[in-house]
Length: 461
Image (cartoon, rainbow, N blue to C red; front, side):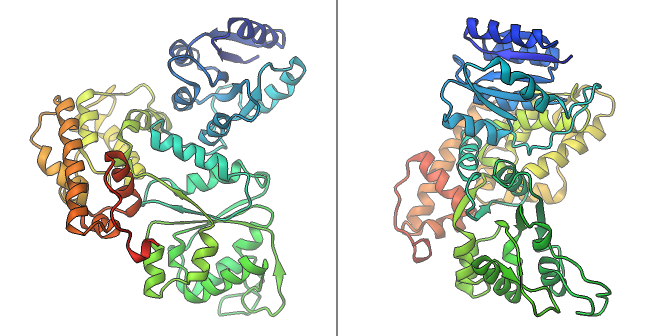
């Protein structure tokens, strides 16, 4: 028997589904709204939640991240009246386990519940296999839509974003929602391997190919056959590895180091970078033909400073994952976290929370005094381009003056965008560099403030 929660404003459907689930031996709680459903989820900690995506006032997509931030997180089944609804793909990309169309056939419920509950031990402890992307900001919902639309494709995807934004999480989400989900997911950090070993790591090597090669060894492409290969920091590939990778993408054949015979593998390639590959192509350090093969489709990850509204959810998620779900965050501490530029993004936030918990000890509320700034973080706060310019103006504002801060910050950001475009003659790339931003973040700010497009530089095309 498991505890289940139904969140649906259709009273007749909710009652019928609850009765069917109870007849299968489960304990069921039903709620008609998002707000009441979240309260019930926090109180009951259900093993699974049946969530209607079209709830009044607060929709299912807004509820989903909060449900998944619980510890342990429930399995979530999203329900829609339209079987091909785009919101269903969004929800799956954000971490929902299943999508079903309403009405649900009673005969389908036993197998559905078996899929949901078979992995959950009786103790309630549970480790989710599906990747977690936490957040309900417009930027994260757009990211979820992008993942949902790209996942079924076999096309290569270039995932771009600053360090610490979660590029591997996006790659795993694309894999888990693809036709290759039952195949392997193999990740390679191109920057973590010495140049002399990178080629052998990717393609494998034969016995005696080089000193220390005492036996045949498969490469990551061999291991990813039938699944997905994720190349992180792909801009660090050596010229030789770039050429061999391009050949593999074009012909689906490759040779192990020290072998003459060709091998074949069926692999979907996902790549990630935190550098501007167009600049490296222009500088001659990255092959243009390979860049075009990698950049068939693109996903842009927003930096944390562009989605600060997700901070409460992220903090709650990390507190739960670190084993301290009972700990709260004071308003003063939240205001302090919103002031920081977070150059290390979500990874830096998690480290900050872990450090704060050590300082907190057995306490139950994190305050601003628990989030100390290290020297390099203080320097980043003052000098981090766009955000640094904002921080220099507002560091003297009291932490409780949050409304004034956000009004001032918005005006300053808009002014900085306009001034940067004016000084660079409308060249967006040059304006972004002037403010210490990447081009994607700068263009998001332009769209937010309805700034004129200006001229596009040759490298923008």
